[in-house]
Length: 477
Image (cartoon, rainbow, N blue to C red; front, side, top):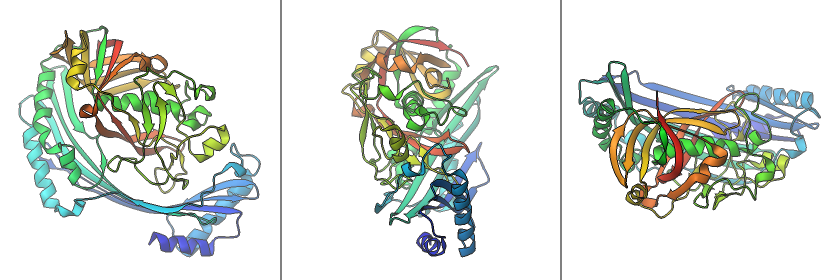
């Protein structure tokens, strides 16, 4: 169907210097059982198109859900009108807009399709997980859910570029909330940091069905635990918290359009400047970060970005040195710097902008036990609960669901409401040890927001456990 619409547009478009069409069809379904009650099942489907036009030296955009011949002609005419209005006035010169001539495709690998389980089977599974989450009278809220998103994207342009990509996402979640007076604790697995490309087989690979009892047990232990102490200590972050740390203090500061100033009046700028690339000591020599759109199961794996350029694996930071920004072809042309194929759009009615995709911290050579044994006085933290970071993505304060003291190389008392703070420009230089592949987990962020108008998009992050020396930790809500 998308191919038919693309052909229809090519036949009906007015004479233009250049056009690029992006068609997106998406379905989303979410099933949730909360407190043993099946919630209304969410089903949505969207289908629409966005066209980018270059004509008479200007750039214009228009989008529509009317994919009839007349609707497509109207969309093209509107984009042409804006191209004429913006000629020689735009921030980006029309001559810099990239023009892909690539052809190809991509499809998520699916072993067990979503429909291989009936709706009744999925609800029965979530009911079972609910019963495993409600193990104590102090647990006052509990829920389990699974969702899937299926997205088809077609990119075509007047220079012969033609790309078809199809994505299948599985998004599971568990949570339990316990309360005792003015003390409320939450423990979760998934929801905001766990998602995979693929089918229902990812439930087994995430060990999702075995997590409910642990979540329930830990939320009760947190309810009974003392507050996290305030002190300077070594910090062991597990992968579910490393996701947020990588996302906020490496990913966003290195987005090239942000460095160029495009986000300053909305989401802020960056402490990173163009002259830092190639020489700046972003972290210790333990820090190796890659842009990696090649892991089949990761959320932001693809063959081509939404400007139609092929995606390849690159080091962003190697041995602590900042090598290249997260910038697509347009930002590369503007800045003169090499980048990556990460120009992405969240929906059919949004133009692509520089976004994180799969941004991964490469594993080291230490087991979790060795990481723990290396710490005399420290704290382990797991699963993000709160975050705050300034508009240059530099000073930050993050809180976690779960904390456990480490004393003389051994795990000790569990503590609640653990927090830590730091400065991105120096925090990564305190990285002293990086976990091996046995600690490495493929996770992600489901709702990364950026752009005007806003775009929410999936981002993949994979990381091992990591140790940071002499960090300011404290307790608090």
